[in-house]
Image 1 (cartoon, rainbow, N blue to C red):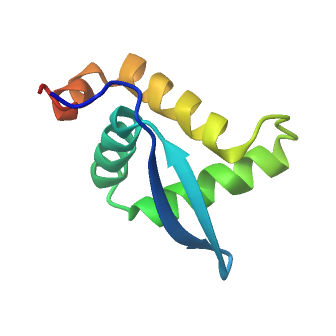
Image 2 (cartoon, rainbow, N blue to C red; image 1 turned 135 degrees about the horizontal axis):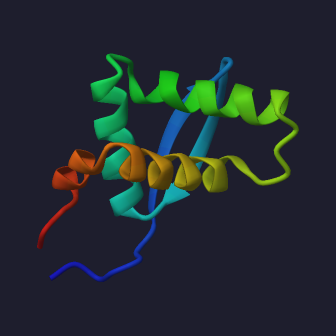
Length: 87
C-alpha cells in the first residue's frame, strides 16, 4: 500500500520557464482527469491557473491554487473521483 500524503513532483514549462510543482498524487489524479475532461493538456491547465491567480491577485502559491482547483472540481464534478487511486 502506498504511503498517504507522499508528495509527487512534476516538472513542466510555464511561459517558457522550467518549473517543478510538488503535490500529493491524489491531487495530480484529479488535475489529470480535469485536463482530459476539458480537452487540454495538463501544462495548459496549470498555465491557466497560474495566469488567473496572478490576474485575480491570489495570495497563495501555484501548488495551493492547484489543490483548490482540484477540490472545486470534485465538488462540481463528483465523477472525477473515480480517477483516484483505490490502492
